[in-house]
Image 1 (cartoon, one colour):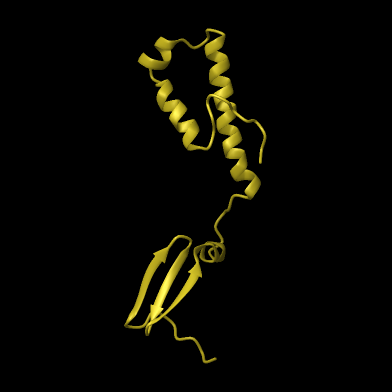
Image 2 (cartoon, one colour):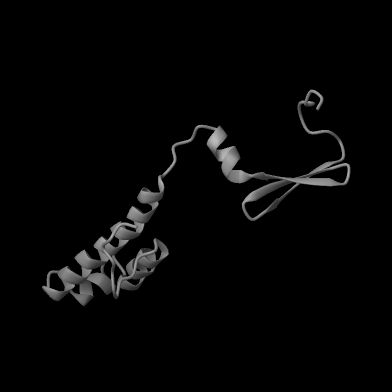
Length: 108
């Protein structure tokens, strides 16, 4: 193996596929895992447990909102006509991986 040439040479094409940067040079394709690139740039990372904790946090928020509604602390007028829209809050919780209807409070 020779010494690598720095930079990208003419005729080199870069594309992406899910999870990979694809480098095509002289008709040969090679894949470089994007995760390897991200690890190499020393950026703060979430651990697997922390990612699962985001879902749990969303579910805890759902439990809190449902409890406040059931105890008449928050009413429909506040949630629908005030600053907050319950449908938007529920959608955000679900976007984070949570479940407003049946929240699971375990961290996985």
